[in-house]
Every structure is written in structure tokens, then in C-alpha cells.
Amino acid sequence: MSKVLLMGQSNVGKSVLFNRLAGARATVSNYPGTTVDFDKGRMRIEGQDVEIVDIPGSFSLEPKDRAEEVAVKMLEETKGATVVCVIDSSKVERGLYLALEIIEKRHSVIIALNMADVAKDANINVDAERLEEILGVPVVPMVATRGEGLKELVSRIREAVPVEIEGIIKNVGGKSGTSSHS
Ligand SMILES: Nc1nc2c(ncn2[C@@H]2O[C@H](COP(=O)(O)OP(=O)(O)O)[C@@H](O)[C@H]2O)c(=O)[nH]1
Ligand SMILES: [Mg+2]
Image 1 (cartoon, protein in one colour):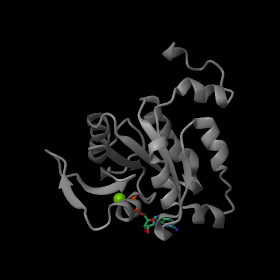
Image 2 (cartoon, helix red, strand yellow):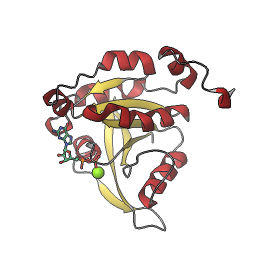
Image 3 (cartoon, protein in one colour):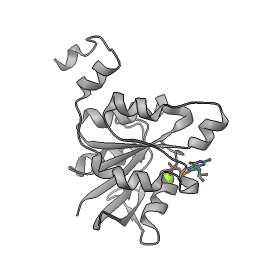
Image 4 (cartoon, helix red, strand yellow):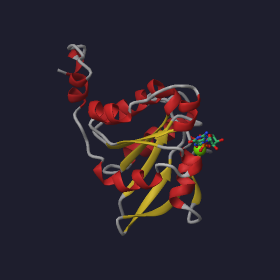
């Protein structure tokens, strides 16, 4: 069965989104050998059953605590999964750090630009279309608590494919600060 992983920092709305997507069919599991819990459930995408996992909150792929370690392990163990990177629209650059790390590891990523309401109230304008152009992955503005953007997110999950980080660097007009990758 194909898998969808919800990843992102703490308090960006992963669990609200998870509950919207998995509904009542969710179970709590404990990551083996740890006290770290995570939710697992099922959803349907284009008529197919898909497993969806609410991964523990993580700031980056360089783990700073047990929960982040588990998050990184779960990502590594789940080859071929689609990763929904949930980002707080009012703190985009923070969330993009993790998203770029995941993209760089050649996972299929779709970005849920959540908390669009919070950003709007704070007069923060995030150009989702431009971000999508730059990253080459789908970017969907959302308000998870109201279910806004949910349909679009689900309908675009299949568009998530691995992209080249070099292409992203080119798109932002970056110079060759990537010599370590050459
Ligand atoms: N205003 C607003 N609040 C949200 C949104 N999504 C989630 N929240 C709230 O943000 C808090 C953190 O959400 P949660 O799903 O627990 O975040 P997680 O730590 O990433 O799992 C909760 O109080 C949610 O109700 C959103 O789109 N807009
Ligand atoms: Mg949560």
C-alpha cells in the first residue's frame, strides 16, 4: 500500500490535517524501543487505499531529540512514500528548511502551506504559485482547522515527484555555493 507521511515542525497543524484526512480510522502506535508515539490511519486517493502517518514534529533532518530521531528514521524507512510537508504560512522560511532537506533527499514532496488565515491576519503574503514555480513541487495554501485547501491537497498528492535540488538553486538565482555536491 502506498504511504503518505505528514512532516513538519511542531504546531504547524499536522495533527489537525491528519484527523481531517484519516478521520476515525486512526490508531496510535509507539515507535519500537522509544516512548515516541505517532498516529497512523488510512485515506483514499483516487479510489486507492493509502496509509497516512502523522510523523513526530521535526525542525530539520539533523535530530536534536528523540522525537526528531524517530521522525528521521520513519522518513528513511519509508522509501517511495509521498511526504506532505506542513508549513506555517506565517513562518515560511522556518518550514522551508526542512522541506528543502527532504526534497534534497529525493523524496516526493507536496507542500501544505497551512495557517493561511494566521498569515493573512498578520499581513504576511505568501505567493504560493511563485513558490511552486521555484521548488517544482505542488504548494497548496490551507486552513486545516476549517478544511480549506483539503480537496486541492488530496487531488494534487499524486503530482508530488522527486525533483533536483540543483534546479531549485538555479531558480532562486543561487551561485555555485553548492561545491560540496559537485
Ligand atoms: N488558525 C489556525 N489554526 C490552526 C490551523 N491548523 C492547525 N491549527 C491549530 O494549531 C495548533 C497546532 O495544531 P496541531 O495539529 O496540533 O499541530 P502539530 O503539532 O503540527 O500536530 C492547534 O491549536 C490547531 O487547532 C490553521 O490552519 N489555522
Ligand atoms: Mg501533532
